[in-house]
Length: 498
Figure 1 (cartoon, helix red, strand yellow):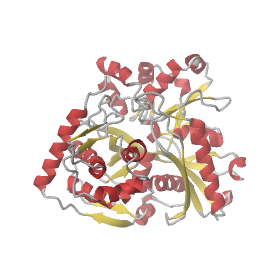
Figure 2: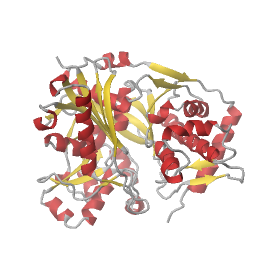
Figure 3: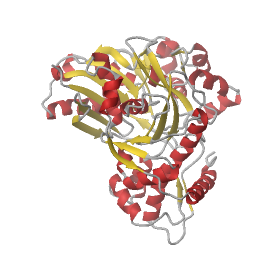
């Protein structure tokens, strides 16, 4: 009898593999970081082969370290950094260039052009997205236009496009597929029809033959090559990392929301089986599709995307050198009672929701001779909470729902100082679960549902357990003053770059 689901959680800075048992508990995990490539200002790239090798290595390691064989695994579920774009040769399986990461801003000028041509409303209606270089479609176009011979090879059917889920599945089993949640992040997918959209493809100048087949998020899509793990294992769950985390947090009903504190910060609210259009610069996105084949049952989400959360703390470590490891930030920030008037707007990769300003840049304001590294660290943590507050305000306007609580996960959700400040600045209780690896857990749940490892979403909901609840305690007047100061600082950061 199979004992585990193997979740592959391919993130922006590391690849992770986690074994989950039937109770949704972690049995073993392995993780490996990989390089971030900054070849030009505003550009962020990954070596797609390095992603594949790191993901395979941790999957093999977690099995070996825990004395688990392929026959013990019911299925594999995959969660992935979204929007990051790979083009590869169908014959050799080799990428034709570095992957362009979701944070990369090189296509901002082309996005400006589309908006100037009054295409924004059409794209929003069909895709639920704003026109921004964040998404995959303009990245694919850039690769076709800037890698020698790529467009001609694509027209001949020699190349494949994929986000990281597609890339990993191709390497694992040879199938060229993506699920509805990842497809909904490309600017090329119609979220009403659940199909690639020919009109949008024409505007982006991306050939249809480049694209993967669309499949449900929960359903068997292939069997791994036996040589990889000693025997074939079914691949049965796929979701973009934020949708996977929402599923793992058991936000299965309309009005439930979660916020993930990872490299970026991503808040998703379940709006049920109808797509809710945003009038406040949020995204309407597919959460997941459950069923053996399309159309299945699709849940939709409203989403606010913050580009720099944990990545801001990494910059304190790697760029500024004021902490040795990311976990040190809490103690440093707690060594001062407040930020000393410092406000940090971490627009290193522009600003995401609700601003969508590709030309904003990182800004620290309010410094005096008395400012210390501790004040900057505290302001960096506060910036994560402030960005989340901007997103929640827009989300409540769009949905008409006043949030009762916000479920949180991701690495920075372990930071009690940040979580209490988040509750204070939102004036909403923050609830942290026992298992904060909800991205991997969601991928595992989607895979497990497809193969009968778990019987239903109700069984999954019953497994969710709370670790701690943070209750708002900040006076309303102070909350309003802090948010007003934050928004003044955002104005200073906006439209900075040429």
